[in-house]
Length: 457
Image (cartoon, rainbow, N blue to C red):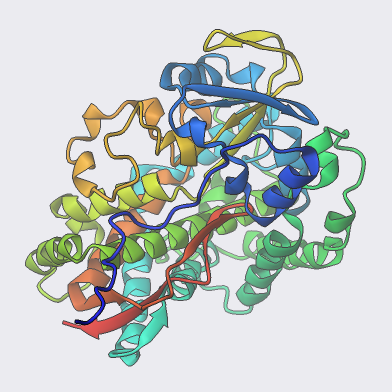
């Protein structure tokens, strides 16, 4: 009698979390390899977990307390020194890093850029990129392809098109490579970070990348100055650079300088393609994991699109595609860990917090917390059939409060357009033995890629 082969796992891939106390060196080694590996298993079953590894820390998974940190007491919990040390060399004092008045005026100046109207006007760039992705996948029909690599290519096309449309001389590839190398090589926690060494003390690994980053910024500066000096084309849809050049703080009338424009554009390029590529790659993995979900989504896409490419006008007719995106963001949030520094003494979940303590918001653990979600490790897009039933601060793929991701609407629109187009034209199945591994350095990436078999339908 032949041996019975084990069936597929009932749950998509996840990382085994920590079940015993770790010391500084073991924690550092794990964090440099995969930040998720330092999360304790009890963080998925408790509202708060506290400890000391070099310095005091607290992990918060309680929605009312997260509201306090991200909204009500925002100024008491600025982004941590570790976060700023990692990101500042690449994106300066841009929106993602800046605090206080400097953040406020930039946010006021940039907010109109990401209005619903402006985002919808950029929809054709997203549809065009979906078509180009379809062409590449058509060539892979009947074979396996790395869908993470494909989605990185697709979303970088979108962000570069909507940022520097018409600037054919701009070396987009060099910007992409410099950012990618920085994330891979230097955006890792150091021993100094774990021990709480002051931010002004240099981290050797980050100094090594300064030459490439300097060159990348010079390329971006030249592109910005050339656009500012050129006459506007009245027939051209304004792109992100046009909109930022025209933007000003409505209160002070202040406009961004070239370095400020550059740092924010680089922020949008990083966040605007990396996070959406990850969302799409994980969504495609999940659709391949559960063929019934994929079939239902394909039926909706084909019924609405009738073979054509999705556009902005189709979004309201594709609710199940949106639910898949939302569920992918729950299971594999690109920003899977946020970090804050307490500026003054406070009490969180009846726990004493001292000034200087690190307060971590482990979004990965929050989204899988058994106190908040039914069967949290399972893939179930139907849990988002009624978004109003979900506590706003239990689901934080884009953060929340005043510092909620300014490009969230852009990312969701792009992801739905691309996913609907691809699911309407292709069927994806898993490649045996090639499951991705969730690994977080700066974002939650699928280590090894997302290898799926591609079939036209």
